[in-house]
Length: 180
Image (cartoon, rainbow, N blue to C red; front, side):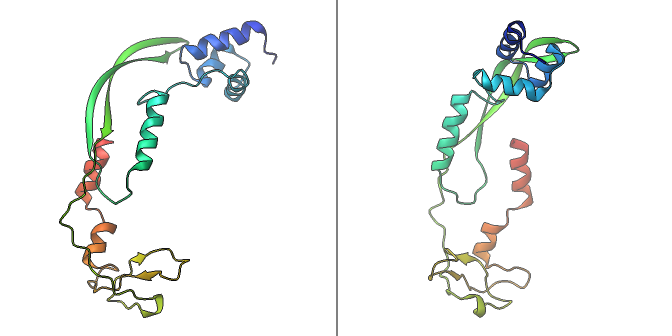
């Protein structure tokens, strides 16, 4: 298949209208989705925004997310309804329609100030028993690596404090899944 000037112009027009590579391939005929993607790349056509925001918005959200601490916690979201125009294929035609999209933005996290962290017994691997906490502390490649070693219940490999970090209650997971 040769890329004629006419087909390239049609590709550029369809790409700017927001059609997917598969939809463009179907409209051009005689070309695969991957061929369309390759040609778009070679033409250096601008990327399109993903669902959920613009390219710039998603980049700023990603960099902000990298700066936050990685302490285990349930996500805290605030929602907002916005209207967007999207294109979708109906048979061989593309229909543009406005839809309402509920977007979620993560709110600032403030850790509780009344948390009591147990004092670790600093046990090595060979000193662990069935009744000691096996929560690893530090980098395993460093000399100061150790395990918590505090008393743990019969059914758990971790003490009460570390079990709360390791296991999230089912209702918290369900609430987080509903928000996503």
